[in-house]
Image (cartoon, rainbow, N blue to C red):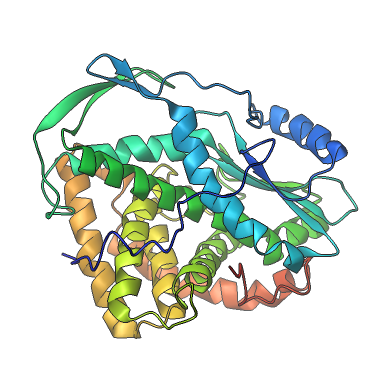
Length: 381
C-alpha cells in the first residue's frame, strides 16, 4: 500500500480554483458563434453545455439530505480551467474551447467546432465526474485504501440521478472528501484524453480519412471488424494523457524546485485511484477500447515514466497499488466483468496495439493542428 507524504501540502494548489468568469463551466477564448455551434453539436449527442445558471438534479441523498452536484462539478472543472488557461498561447493561431455538459452518463468528446477552421471543442459530461464520486465513496466504504483515514462506519445513500440505486458511503467526512478528490483526478484524466485527440492529430486524421468532425467516447457499436485503427488511437490518447499530466504536475514544484519521488508518488496515487474508477465506466469494446482498468495502467505508466520514475520501480508501484484498488472494488460489490482484464488482453495491448500505434503515429502527427505543441510538450503552469 502506498504511504502518503505530507498529504496536506502535496496538491500544489491544484484544486484551489481559478479566477471568476461569467461561465465557470467553460474555458478558452470563446466567441458567441463558438457557443452557438457547440450547443448545436452537443445537442445532437443528447447533452448541452452547463452555464452559470444551470442546475442538476440532486446526485444522491445521505441521511435525507440532498448533495449538490453543481458544486462538485464546479470545483473539479476549476482545475481544468486553470491548467488550460495557463497554456492558451500554445494553441495559436487556432483556439481550444472546453465545456462541461449536463449528461448524467460518463462520456467525453473532441470535435471541430467550425469545419475548415482551427477551432476545437473538448467536452466531458458532469456524469463522468459524479459517477466517479459514487464509485470512490463505495470503495472507500470498505477497508483498504487510505488506511490512515478513520472509517467511522458507513452510511446508506440513495442515488437520485441518473438512476435509482442504494449504496454505502463512508461515515468519515475525511474519507468522503478524499473520494471527491479521487473523482477530480479521474475527471481531469478524461479531459486530458480528449485534449490528446486534438493535439496528437487523431481528430484531424479522422476528418481527413473518414470525414468525421468529432470523436465521441461512447459509440454503441464495435468498430468495423477489418480495422483496429480506432483502438490504436484511443490507446495512444490514454498514453499521451499520462504524459500531459506528468508535465503539468510532476516535473517541478511551483517555485521551480525539483520534486522528489515521494512527492510525485503521493500525487500519482490519487490519479491512479481516480483514473481506475473513472475509466471503469467505459466498457471494453472490440476494436475500440481495452478494459478500463488496463487503460488506466497505460495512463499511469506514462505519467510515472514521463514524471521521472524509473521503469521497474514504476511498474511495481502501479501493480501493487492497482491491486489494492481492484480488491476494494471487488469488496464493494463491483461485478468482475466490469473491471478485470485477462492476461491475453494485456498481451494484446503490449504487442499488437503498441505495434499499431508505432506504425501510424506519424500519420496522426501530420494532422496535428497546433504545430507549436510538440507531441511531448503540454500545459505549462
